Length: 111
Image 1 (cartoon, rainbow, N blue to C red):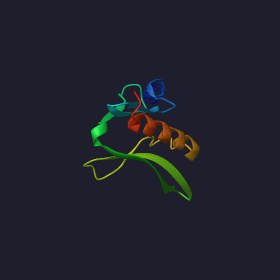
Image 2 (image 1 turned 45 degrees about the horizontal axis):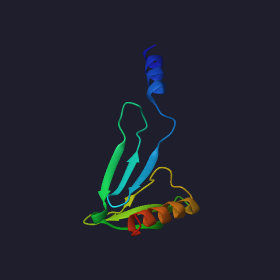
Image 3 (image 1 turned 60 degrees about the vertical axis):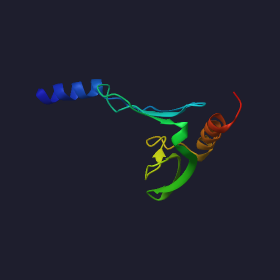
């Protein structure tokens, strides 16, 4: 009976999806956010000021026997690049659109 109760509680609070987002604010920086797998935990959010962003790049890596592309932000003073959509790993075409839009917003002089 206890096992059924635990299973019901787990199913109620478990999410069937993970939300990941990238918010680019001209002149300020970027914010990444990843929701947790349960409703009880908060999202992991990080803000990176424009002054600390060295570059935004699309890298490729192996996942199993396939090549996957990922969007990464190279942050000044950090040894590792920040992967933007670590759980979703969208296709390259989608990453290219996000990459172009992010660079245009961060680095274009237009107001």
